Image (cartoon, rainbow, N blue to C red; front, side):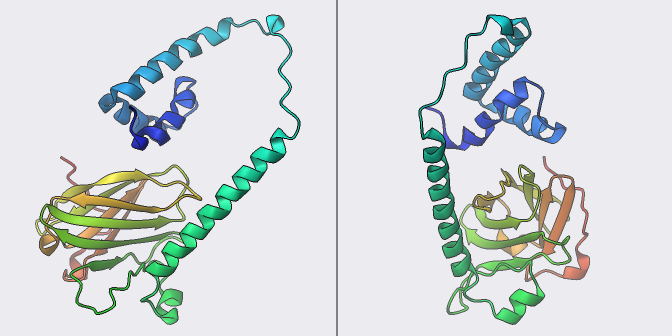
Length: 235
């Protein structure tokens, strides 16, 4: 049974076989196909069909079937209902996330994403990305675990479909990978990732959104030592 995590990749297979993906999207999909035999088999099947398309004779096609009356209205209504439900879910999540921030901080620093811990005794680290391009918001919450560190990422305002790669930087300056996700406009822009680097040894969070790199210091680190455009060790 195919994993739900492959859904977004499968949506791109048709455009991939027809050569309609951008260089960045094609590179990301190729990397996924190398490790997913089910998606690779589907891509091979679609590729066979794509190679036959130039031989099709439009003059031999019959008339296109007429959709049932009212289908467009029903589809539009279903899309509208799903969109409204998604907006309600995002408003609830964002409201909970901002419950511990003051209006002055939210207005002055648009990139801060705070999840209130109520008593201030939580071991979580809230990381703020500042000096971002206009309209872009990035923030993270780090939580220690036995396996390392859990990272809850929040990204908004980048181009839909952008591949985001996340690293935790250790005291030696190297970047320890925490995972990747693809930003989709209009969908939930939060991602939960993990890294083997312990939170006590983490000095910065690095996010590569497409060709751009954004870096933010972790609360216990020296922000003056943070390089804004590092070359991360992804090995």
